[in-house]
Each structure stands twice: as structure tokens, then as C-alpha cells.
Image (tube, rainbow, N blue to C red):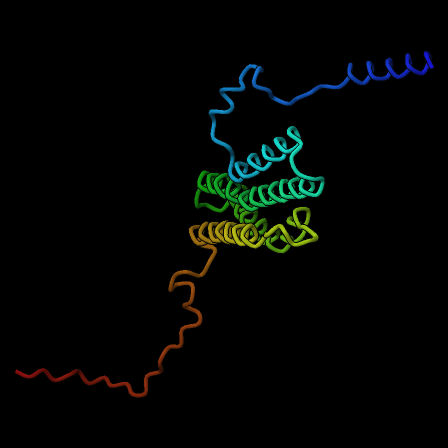
Length: 202
């Protein structure tokens, strides 16, 4: 028994030696400054649910079924926040890609063509693989509503695609002027030709 107790104590000491608790507490440095900053988009609801779960766990209120419901609500809120973060990710790429297209200029070169092609192909690829991107956030019970996140994701990708088309129009790669359609213009044939000069009334 004594050997087993010593072994168990040694194992606990070994685990505590190589384990670190990264939870920020009120007594830690920087806790008040961190609390003063606004929470990221979609994280306020998650923090409120997490605090509710912690209070229920600490005070022991409710039955085990209520605790399970609170944990499931917290997980659902986290999935919604992550899904919205995924939906807003194309917005950052639009700003970065737009700046790169602006710096590449309107002339045709390898850099401008590669940046423009990336602005056209990347949003199309994201749209076609949208189901795979949002699959980790789906809930088998259907509690996580991903329609809003998917609509935002589609809208931002279409905006990105429109920025790429605008860049192609500025590079004269799209038929946006009348001179681009001159080959398809049907000219009228003259039925009569007269060489007599017109008579001007005096």
C-alpha cells in the first residue's frame, strides 16, 4: 500500500510538473486591462453562457440534465461564433487582394495577371467548397443555424469576384467599350448611289 501511495504521489508530482494552467484569473497581471477591451464579434454570448455554466457548476444548482443543457448551449454558441468568423474571413482577403491589385497597376504583366487571376479563382473555389468549409460547425440536432453565416460568406465572395472583374475591365481584358464589338456590327448596304450634286435653293 505504501509503495502504491508513493507511486501515485510521484505520478501526480510528475504530471503537475509538466502541466500549466493558462486560465487568466483576477489576481493575474493584465486581467483588468483585458476585461476593458471589447469582446470579438460573436464572443459576448459565448462568454455569458460560459459564466452561467461556471456559476451552476460552482454552486451546484440544478440537476445533471440542466448542466448538460448548459454545456450543449455553450458548445452551440461557440460553433455559431466560429461559423461567423469563417463567414467574415473573405473580407480580410478582399482588402489585402484589392491593395495588391491597386499596386500592380493597369498594365499587363506577370504580377498583375497573377493577382487578378487569384481574385477570380479563389472566390469561385470558396463558393463551390462552402459545404466542406462549414461542415465542422454543423450540429446533428440542427441547433446551429448556419444560413446567415453562409449568406454572408457568399456575399463577400461575390464582392471579391466583382473586384476581380473590375480589375480586368481596367486592364482592358473585358469587352466593355464599343470598339470591342466593332467586328459584330452590321453595316447597312447602299441601295442607290448618285453622283449628282444636290441643288441648293437660292
